Image (tube, rainbow, N blue to C red):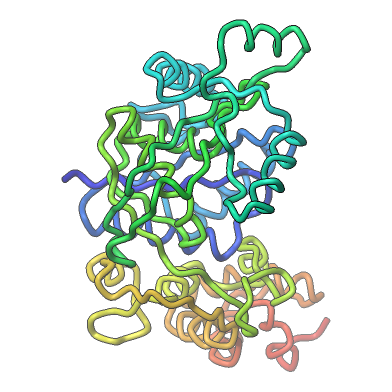
Length: 380
């Protein structure tokens, strides 16, 4: 199997450590297997998506060293690589499902669905779509249209067992009877996440879908879509979430989460890649300081834990310190200059500056701390 992995961020904010770790694992897996790494931008959320965030994601990924083989800015054989440029493709496959009787137009309002769900709960049933529009006559459809209703397109979920093998979690089984007929095209013509991602992964020939295990509940819907459309089902790999120190989902309240802020504080990209790779994964040797070449050589999912990882800033600081100590001195000098200048120090004597940096670099966790440790050697 030719390995093609992908990272598909939504440009609705800056790249954070959780998404960066997903990108890193996709990249490492592709490189380990001699495959390709694809970048796809999922920008169908028009209100929240912004080009500014898309460009920032590119910058962060490149800073981390995660160059892509195909993507919106570099092209490729399976583009376009922005979902906003693929709407006609989604419509084509949605209407194919309609023609084959595997999907249907639904004219129900959200209020009507909620009323029926509450009634189902009162009867001891499940709050799921009840198939109200599944067998409408043409006259009934026209009556709804005459009322001004704009239908969505729903995929009809068969009552069958859905199972797949996950490289981390093993065999996963869902029952179709517990899954509602779900929307694939909204009333405004926009494709939903579960539909667009299947079409994209299939047409871009993605072999492995590697993502956080918070997506696990989406997978049975996607497996059904792959199968009903006649596509090969990719291998799924659901990696554990990253949690904060209080074991809740990692967020801003746990401290810095945006990759750009780590760059701005003077963390080295290779240290971040190394650290994030080791969250829920370990090398065969058990070593923790693993340069990129070692990571590529050793990475696979057989040693990936099923348990969530705790983000430990102190451990990252320790690792970053190790990389600062051993990096080329001239590189650390160059990276330190902006921090020293911002602190008001004169750095015109390059030889002297190099000696100072060499003296103090072993004492800092990140380069923003350099001025504090170097101040005794400088006059403002």
